[in-house]
Amino acid sequence: MYPLPSSILAQTYQIHHTSTNLMTGTAIKILIVSLACVGQLSTAHAQTGPTQEDAEQNGQNSITWAIGAGGMRSPAWLGSSNTRYDFLPYFAFNWRDIVELNVTDGLSIDLLRGSTWHGGLIGTWRRGRSSRDLGALAEAGIATLSNTLQAGVYLEHVPIKNLTLGVNLSHDIQSTGSAYGNAYIEWDIPVLKPVEHSIKLNREFMNRSAMRRYFSVPAEPAAALGVQAYHPGAGASGTRLGYEAFLPTSHSTGFALGLYWTRLASKPAASPLVRDYGSKTQRTAFAAFLVHF
Image (tube, rainbow, N blue to C red; front, side, top):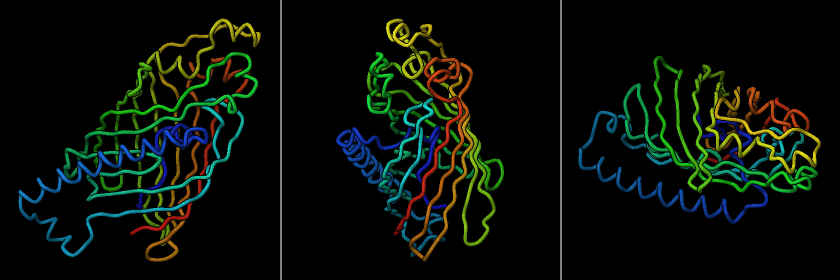
């Protein structure tokens, strides 16, 4: 499939309307890193000489790009029952399925490059929440959260064609102490021409710092809201089921669609933020028009 705007808990990997400068700087930094990796990997590849795969790909472009724009509907913040709508600019870069970079999923570098095993480095970002997102909760003292960058590793196994099993671990680059883990399974559904589509099931986990960052309610805001203070520990944060599709409209254009349903786990769902002011069921959808090269 062409690279589509998706990822683990989709509502946390979006561009935030209050952080344009941060996201622009992030994209530039990740792009520089990815291009440097491409240069190093290209040199190593050239030194090893042509392979059978090279022969099969002779005459084909090893670098693909995609650009586009669309819109996204998502929860106002992780656990919110309110909805926000965002313009979604999109770009993606892929070098031989080794180095991949896109606006919403960030950077991944496959260092294993096996036939059934893949693994390497990832770089992503996670959306925070602004006072505008929180509304009256911010007035009561619930903290706003800045967007954060994550760095980590991933490992994937392809036991049979079109089926991928994977895990990844990441942590905030900023000094929040937050760390995250994901276990997922993805099935590329057989193509129903001309549609390409897939289904992905994901389970995310957070350490105590991450869980409290997003779902704790300190004593002072709790008193203002008339609820008990809440300080969760580490554990599962939620399960997400996603469907993605790409409908070509020509050789180089098409529409991308994503539908995601997330159910927050017991510890996030027990937070007064979610229980009294939000929803443990989260829904996200996007649509975009893409041009690929």
